[in-house]
Length: 194
Image (cartoon, rainbow, N blue to C red; front, side, top):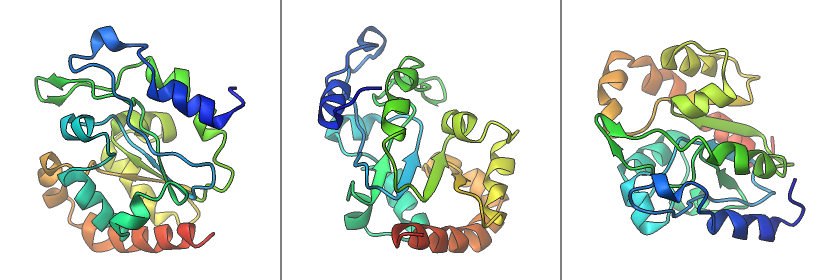
């Protein structure tokens, strides 16, 4: 494990490990401080986030912050919220949405970061690649999201907040009616220190 956090973050931000596979070039996007109590484990930045370098700086981020019940100020405070995706760079566009996160990224960097989160109270998992890493026992998105009922769970899965998931949200109205209020309470408790 890399020992100096500022050196590790500098290495990550300068990473070009999979640049030959990134049509828009490398631009690692993450948010990290070891004192964070809430971890957002997502898939990979989208095109707009790649352009701005700000995580969840898009319609998905607006919906996510609403679901979490936190302000932009809290969300973008790295001492409170860490954002560590499975892939730090925008992988490009595929046939039916963005390509999956590059497989080189997570093994190279994530464990060294996650091991430093000593105050972590709650992990919010977004997307099937993050779900496979953090909740491998869940067979489907709906099954993973249903873990919200377990109040002792330290990992909560969410559907991706992208407008592309509006159909899933329409088919599962219990999510916004029942799961989101509990999620907000869990996030508030985590940020308050447990």
